[in-house]
Amino acid sequence: MWKIILNPVFIAGWIIFSLIAGLMGSSKRMGFWGTFLSSLLISPLVTILFLLIFQPKKG
Image (cartoon, rainbow, N blue to C red; front, side, top):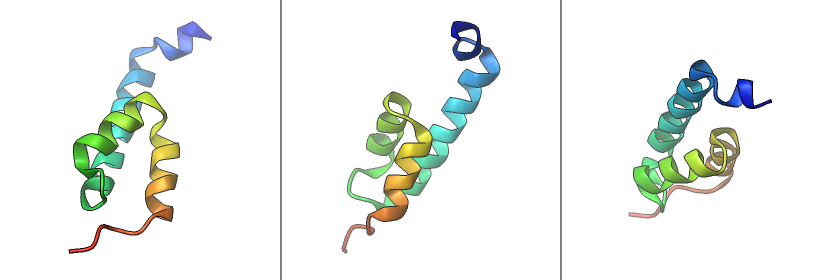
């Protein structure tokens, strides 16, 4: 399992999906950096699901 997780392609994909989640979250309460860091730590796919559920920030 560690061979998959430490694979450079897997790491690059994780970072790319985290950047996409950060861009999606730039209009949310946490902003780009908060969303980007949370998706790096938790999971980009879980973060994107949460972003699709919650409403954008007002004003």
